[in-house]
Image (cartoon, rainbow, N blue to C red; front, side):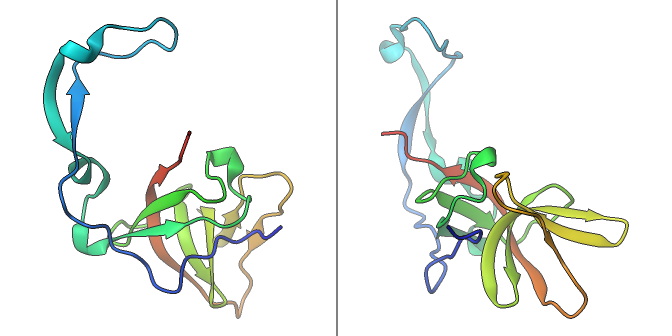
Length: 146
């Protein structure tokens, strides 16, 4: 098992063709079915909801299981925005010593760590001489349920 998430050779930019879906105007209970099919309020484009900055947004496929506690599983597709400033506790796509990895960023008191969300993996303490850059911030996880 690897503790890194390797992207394909090149990042993939999302296609900006509109994907229109019906948006219902009420919340859904996770219990009883609702006859909501006839009560759509408007149509939405998923690009407007998933992509904040088209030129800086890329998709990456996850490999590995180090982030399962954050709901990120092998085979998921992450939406990564390079224009967002990485903050403490954000989930980021980082490049550590020329290897991509997805982890939670810990940055406090001059100490930088990349934190997995799986107790099987230890935190990665960034040491002097190691090359770390945050490639982008993960904004969404496209996780297949069926």
